[in-house]
Image (tube, rainbow, N blue to C red; front, side, top):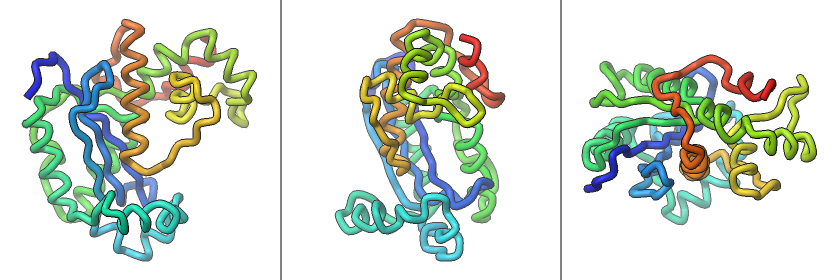
Length: 225
């Protein structure tokens, strides 16, 4: 469907707890320039309809402020986990995806695997082997390592309680877009879209791409930049 050399699936998840229980899956399929070829979003029916799990979710208030209107307007649907995974694997094959990405990829990959197993499925989530790319590491090694980022972060107060420059997707997007008041939505597809834009800005710098380097503490990269 495309002649681009590399096609990326940019994944984001929202979870009811830190170990797994993914209730919102969203992703874009895009070129490295940020051109979006397709996007998907779904609420995991098995998790989202579990009241005990959902009321304990960190962003539980979004059940009413975000997800209820989205469901009512047909912007998202309750979908069985097996169907979500089937669609994702079909998209990977149809669009020739070469790389799966996420911002803090170790978290998203882990909770997808844990949810898969928790819901009684065996085997791998993805049927095809793909390169991986942690967009958090990519951002820290490129855009957020610039002196301009440190200057803006210090001026705007993007500093953690420990005194470190913040490096989450919200702050990376603020810097990349120039919208210093941007607030992350924390719904999966919305976040996947901004992470796609971050990825494209990082690629424009034409620096080394840390493929298959998952884990560690990427934020440490920018503290001495």
